[in-house]
Length: 200
Image (tube, rainbow, N blue to C red):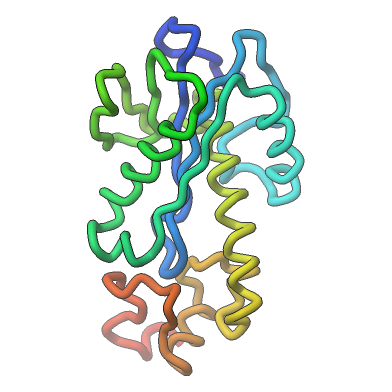
């Protein structure tokens, strides 16, 4: 069965999702997307089920056809200040702020959200695999974040962010062990396991 276009019955329904919650470095990035009533695309799905090439192909299609979209970053310093859950929700709120049309309803990937102004909302577990607007938001959030990590990789190639995008891979953690963390790392995260030898 394909992804559904609408949850609430409201024409201006925004889907929102984030990327980068589980990373050791870089921002958490969220997107919000309002799709038109007739939108369909055979490739669009949960961003985790798509290749990087497929996501990059979908990005301009989503941006061109969406009624409105917004993308927002919450950097590692703010993540350390307010914690990753609050940072993820804050990023989604800011992405909705960037929409040039006010949504009538918001559907959110996951099970945690804070009310946004007085707009009704619903959290949907694995919503990025159920609703097109959340899937579209997941593609934008993941692609914008990946492009950002590739950009800062140039200044810190030791961590190989162009490949691991800041996730806690063995290679990434070996680099942290060998040279320490840098300004882009989330200092409140467990950058190395307690038993370092268990990693290697």
